[in-house]
Length: 251
Image 1 (cartoon, rainbow, N blue to C red):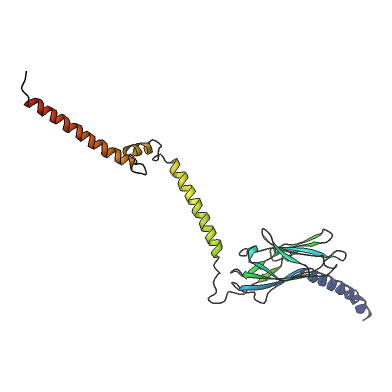
Image 2: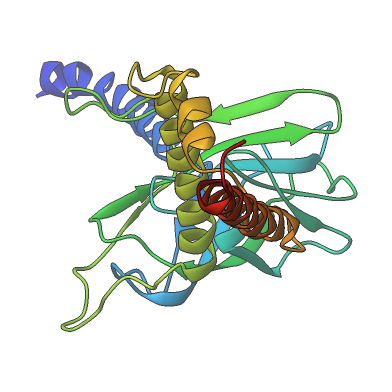
């Protein structure tokens, strides 16, 4: 019995150490969290809450940059709540929330409203957390081969879209896109016409010469009419002279 107790004693510290390691790993897996009460595909005006844990004991979080997943644009994001003095700024691929640095160890928590969630089963928000001492935590990694990454990107699971839910129309974007496409098509057509052999420069003057263009005030047409009348008058005079000569006696 004594041997059995002696053999089991080292298992207690070993189990305790393993528990501490697993506990630390569990805490490290949730440095940036995302949640939403309306986590459903195609949900309109959905509010999404984020929480970035303060990892430093000497510096506070000064700003957070979020990369939006496909189907969301920076213009779709509106800030709802944030730490005092913080504001949202759209970026090329997402948005940033920033303001006075928080106290060391304090979590940065903010909520945004999204115009409409995409029609998908999950959204990945890659996030960069910047500290007042210049250090940056990069929570951008995705699971690979079923293993949890060391710095996972926050991911929001979405329920299937409600029956009858449809994507919102982007009228402004569609109009600007159509105008741009129309301008491009017109420019292409013009370039093709200029480069076409059938539209040779010599063909245009010949058509213009075949059909003289009148002046705006009708001067060209008037000149033609007067010239025709004068010609008829001259011809009539010549006919009269010829007839008179035939009637007169010869010398």
